[in-house]
Amino acid sequence: MRSYTVAIAFAMLLSAIFSYQNPGDVTVRFFVWTRQIPQGVWEVSVFAAGCVLMWIVSVSAHIEGRGRFRRVIREQADRIARLEEERADILKAIRTTPDVLDRAPFVVKEHGESETSGIVEAEEPAEAEEEFHSSPESQGG
Image (tube, rainbow, N blue to C red; front, side, top):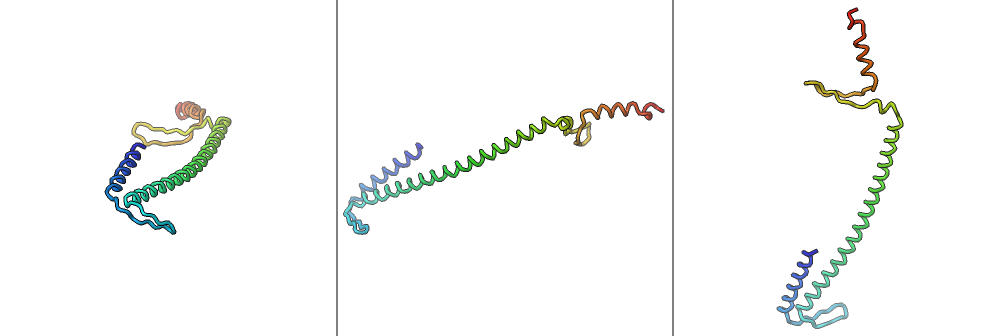
């Protein structure tokens, strides 16, 4: 905001200097209106009127943009609410299904081997080891 204040003050200073250096009268005709005005005053007045007009246009554009951003924010908030609701439903389903909790994706990485992934059953690895140790082939018979 401070830079705008400095820019406006600088423009006003330049306008005052311009107005002082151009004291000659000009005849201004607008539709049926005719007036004798000093040239510097007329041009500074036109410049100020243009500044006010552009300020009004920028304020209206700002208001329009705020409305657009509010709509986008509202849509995003609705989407977030839907996604959070869906996430809660998925977590509830996971918590209430016991066999889903017994299986989990895993990554096995041995020395120098590449990564492999799969599904681990909670009780099967222990049973598989018991079967391996108690098989007739491992006992020699």
